[in-house]
Image (cartoon, rainbow, N blue to C red):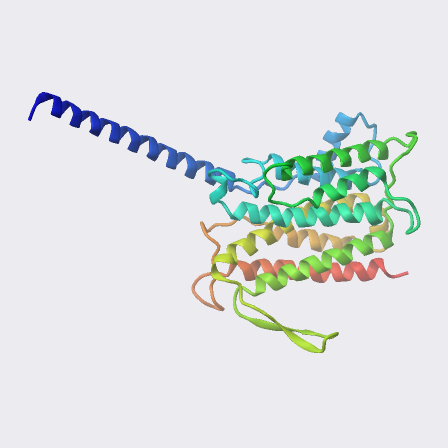
Length: 331
C-alpha cells in the first residue's frame, strides 16, 4: 500500500475520532444542562421579596395588598428567569427533551392566573359596581396568553408585560396621593370568593393524582349519574405529578401573602389556624424527592406511589380550604 494511502486512512480516522469526541462532549453538555434546568426553584419569603421591591419603588411602608401583588409578580418572574428560563415553548436542546419542568410551569401558571383574576375582579374592587383597576385590567389578560408560544409574540414577552403592569399597580397602591391610587380590599367576602376558586383547583388536582392507580367513577348530583375518571396513562404520571407540584409551589406563596395581607380579618374570624393548615400541607407537598423518577407503586406494594402521597396533601389542604370558605362566608 502506498504511503499516500496510509496517510489518507490515518487522516480519515483522525477526523472520525474528532467528530466522535465533539458529539460525546455535546451529549454530556446537553445531559448536564438538562439536569440543571430540571431543578425546581426553592420557595421564597414573600415578605422579604416585597421589602426588596419596596426599596426599588422607594416605598416607605408595605400597604395592605402590596405583598400579595408582589408575590404574583415574583412568581411570574421566577417562571421567566429561573435556570433555563421558561422551558414550555423551547424548540431547541435540551429544553425540547424536558417535560417535568414544563409541567411544573403549567401548574404554576394556572395558580398565577387564578390569583391575578381574583386581584382584578375581587380584591381590588370595593363592590360589584365599582370600576376595575386600569393596570390590573392590563396585567391579567397577558398572563392568559397561550403558554407555549415561542415567537411573534413569545409567551415570555407577554408575561413580562403582565409583570410590568402589576408593578405599576403596586406603585399606585403604595402612593395614596396619586391622582388615581390603587386599592386593595382585604375583606372576608373577597377572600371567600377567591377560596372558592382554590377549592375547585385543589379538588381537580386531587382527582387527577388519585387516577394514578385505577379508573374510578364520580357521581354528578346535577346529571344524576356517574362520570368515569380514566386511569392516568403511564407516560403521563410524571406530568400530572409535576403539574400538581408546580400548583402547590405557587399556592404556597399566594397563601403566605394572604396570611400577611388578610391578617386582621383572619384573626377576627379565628381562621388563622385553618390557613396555617393549608400552608403546612403545601409545604409537605414540596418535600424533597429522593427518587430519580416518579414512582407509581400499587396499593401496599414494594414501591411508593408519589401521586397518592401528593394527593393526600392536596386533599387535606382542600378540606382546610372548605373550612376557610365557610368561616369567611359566616356573618
